[in-house]
Image 1 (tube, helix red, strand yellow):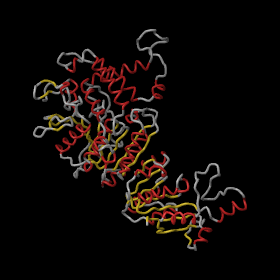
Image 2 (cartoon, one colour):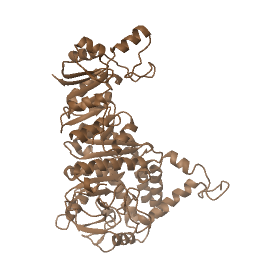
Image 3 (cartoon, rainbow over the protein chains, first blue to last red):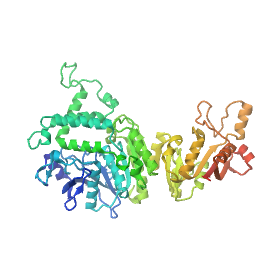
Length: 390
Length: 201
């Protein structure tokens, strides 16, 4: 199963660790399919302490991956959360053992639609079973079992990463000492699903997609995937941020071109976002991961009462949202807070004032860092990690 | 390790048994929360109306959510806490009686502190000054005060009677924040603020 890797996967696996799981006992997916064996690619920073009490799981969002705090093997760019993770930062590898796992269905080394179906010896492509956020989290838990990590000091993530945090807290409450779901929701809204559907339709409308079998045909649905990325990217930014960054400024010209080139800077920017994305992301993976987010409905999985997902939990929660995030607006985080209150859970909730939209959680937001730092310090004291915390 | 806190907050803290669970409604900058957590190992949580206050509390390692005493106590299950605390906030709620009911549902005990509107200075200012009273504990102008449901100590006792609530403790402070022990009629005149601990009967 390690054969037939994509270029990106080969580069990724050369720079991170991986485990092959589900050999003896396959992973039962929510769709009913048993998956196994499957590969999980992950990156770690720092050292697990003797009593295994300092492990922090970082859950990555849709288009990021396990390279949270080191140079990306494909793009060569800095890790996507280096503002948060590193020496002297909020999550310091000197104190914590930080793990980031490429999610199931993704394309950076963990098994996804591009992997080989062991029963046919050919790539799964669209025959790969549809995976859910729950499946991703169960695969992560299986990796932790494999690594001998009983529980996590903290599970943290934004956007789809935040969904995984909520799922972790609901499914494995005793393995999660503290949970930090950022800029997320307990379900995907109709508007969120709608935007994802536009992205998927763009991919499937690309003649090079070939029903998902593009590798077989040696084609590449790059244009469709780029359009999907462009659409999604707009949802990650606020109207204010777009206006401030670009306004109606023209791109490399003094006057309108009276044509359909990228006259405006904002068009040029989006095209660039789209064209660079296709180098590091797989079109079929994009279909699967967006689907997993669409299917996420934590209340639905608990009798339509969100509080039921958290009954009796001892986990310490810290939720965060951003004022200008219209993809996962504050009211969604607040709904989770209400549910946690209804379960009398230990919960903090901070709304950060930012005009940067959904992407704010990936950017330099001092108030987010202050909040996280205070929350983790408090949790570490209770956990008895005090001596490790400066 | 514990910095000194406001006298009425210290009185409240003294009423809370160590190692219990407490919810401080309107926790402000979190001074009482920190005191309860560090000094008494209380599992202390806070609710605060101002988002800036919440953010400051959480950055200090306290467990605080943004919320409104009038609307958000409803979320919590019955008897989720040993104590639900409301300091100097009852008079600013829209429905004080409903808030008290919710506090007594969510907590086994409710601890409430409030300024006494029957304090002699207040009475004098209204009777002889003919203006809405402004005092150290009621520093606002009539048009910008958040205090929309002021009451006297006797008013509060009457409400407790009407609600069938047992008063476990009542502490009255004079204008120098010293405890006074006087018969109710005088306490209602000399007391500038009061701290009550209640429980459902």
